Length: 229
Image 1 (cartoon, rainbow, N blue to C red):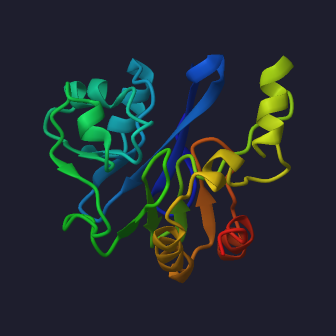
Image 2 (cartoon, helix red, strand yellow):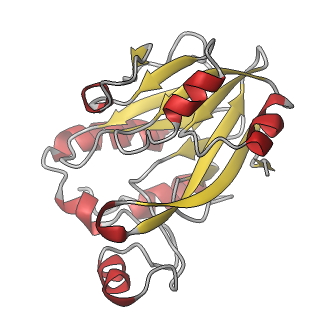
């Protein structure tokens, strides 16, 4: 269930969820074990008893992170299951989920309890969402949410497959979907964030919906965002 993705980092794939217009997406979360053995849980997926047991075996959940304002469906369940964990919302999510009392809003500065282990930056300037991109130094892993996507060719059918293909979601490698490219209305802000991302010594790249990149992460990011000039 928990797949090691490097030193002290795991991925967990969950069941698909249905989004707008009937599009369904696979789900993925990431867990990072910090130096104090507490767990940083990124984009929590559906919490089953089996998943909870597996998570409890590797450490104590300390931080629950919603990395953009579209990845929040299950975080409330995790907050109930782990009441001592601190919860963090991406910019814009607090006003969207007024039923949830988050401990803090994510920004460009890492929280003191994971600073030096996980860096972060807000990819701003997009009309769809503000996404917080993370970098786990120990494993050399950059973690995107929706800004990079790739689904199998047969994942959708009918008109949804046509739309997904036009949106670059069915390419042979993860791409920035067209809908995000055209909605970067403030590209200077996005370029500033990308500059920080490119300065990270990235070896691997994970995204919520796509095949993880296990080597050459820096070169992959350069190619994937070459259009943002």
